[in-house]
Length: 314
Image (tube, rainbow, N blue to C red; front, top):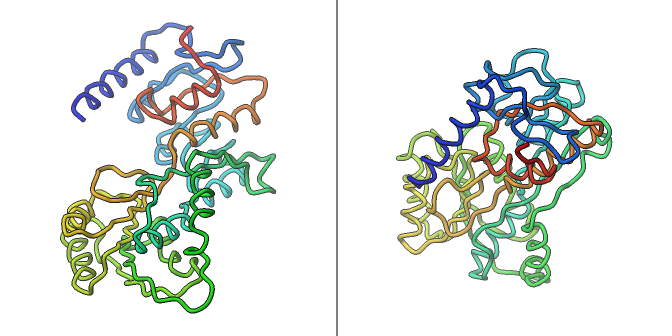
């Protein structure tokens, strides 16, 4: 982890220099010269960006972009992306929807003590004015195909015939309008079979003690599989570690894991979001574009975006 932090710091410095050195050469460009990344910047350096026709930004960093810039937004929730592209605030977006059907199935199979992959990072979609009517274009990740194989292998458990014994797993979600937590509440109903979920609601999502109390309550009620849902999984880390140390199973439902305190994780593939952004760019600007990124080369979304467009240093 320490080496990763040092490498990321070095990358941020290098990217900042690319924008500030006064050199007219792009930081990256495609072989045919159509697509040029003028600079890749940490968000706090947005004011230093050179002039460009399009800005590639993470959803959380949109507010840092100067007014009047065309935006290609990476990693937005799909509903927000649809609205923003439709009303013209964004030129295009790569987007995700929390894969709630998949996490429901993983939680069920885990509760049944059947083998499932420890990590499943699902694909994304891209949205442009041209494909909004069809709700965007999907871009698949390997987990999408793994899920289909898993469904085929475990079809009798996922779609049982006749009366079945209840399957018990606890749902502990962050409070408020957290989209991952809200989606997870639907998980038991999506399975179409009798389940006895503990619908745990943590009072304060930033309070680690509240998470621990909630999951301990589930353990006391003899739950052994926990679906823990939060856009930010960090506050629940100690509680999840406690469950695993006591022999329980934790299915973490979050954009990315952030730690190793779980037995299974279901989320979104960062690289697929980057590839989807490249596909969107090629659709909205087939003639090419000069781009500023508020992502860095330490970001898997950037690496996938650059790889899809065959961007290299000139």
